[in-house]
Image (cartoon, rainbow, N blue to C red; front, side, top):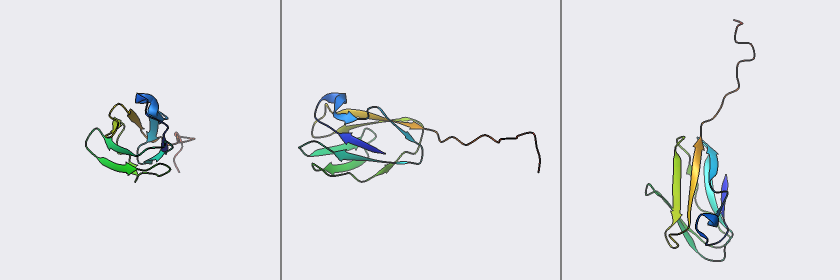
Length: 98
């Protein structure tokens, strides 16, 4: 999943925001703005600098909990990734044994 940086307008700085990502999936931020940003998860995980037109390193969503993040250069830029548990397809005939 890619979260786009689209400006410097608080929670409107990222799209989608909030983002939803399946547990186990990777997330990156792409800078579609004209200035440098530095993304850090609120738990302290440093995702790094992202230059205009660039993409951050990826993080892996490890739980179904909310993952808040922000730009350290522009602290009003805030966002959240909502981890979503992976679903499995139901057994089409759970009463049968094979």
